[in-house]
Image 1: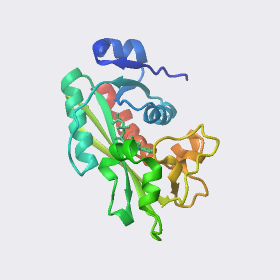
Image 2: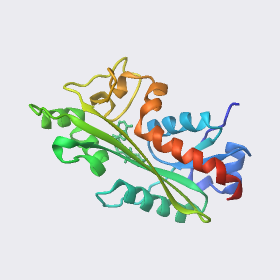
Image 3: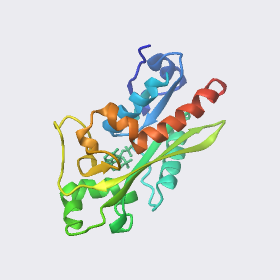
Length: 216
Ligand code: ITT
């Protein structure tokens, strides 16, 4: 079955447009400004028969050192603006030797010092363990906030490894999941989605959502 997926903006979103854009089957809106994240989530959800729309809107910038709290606050804020069921995701890379940095500050750190900066901070450090974490929060009037988490452990590489340069984003070129020879950036999307923090959280969400979405 080919599922529809569309990008919508706050101006054109309501329950009717969601059905028109995404069809009558199971669907959900994902509030994000990040196309890479949207593509990964779309790919996992389509395998589970759920169509997804990307809702681009400026969200609240919650200051917290906990990604679950950030995701929950963003979901409540987004729901208060558009009043239809939705998901948001907050993700972060937590590096052991840097005491969990950049963690909840991942977006800012990626924008500023990028992967080169992280590798510089890790120069001469033996302990290269790191964990990618994803927190997805679904929000609807009936259910309130529902949290789904995913984690993938691995190591920070010594250099950036991009593969053919067509896959991955953000910290993917410097993160090598445990038991893998490749960085996330060296994997095609389907392979990353087999083991990634995001895919684990999305799969938990999809399992739960498939059972309840007809009653929302
Ligand atoms: P939203 O609009 O959904 O908030 P974002 O880009 O701000 O998108 P996050 O706050 O969830 O996303 O993630 C912060 C940053 O961490 C993100 O911009 C990437 O640089 C990095 N990141 C998140 N998930 C990643 C992944 O799967 N692979 C590589 N880097 C990732």
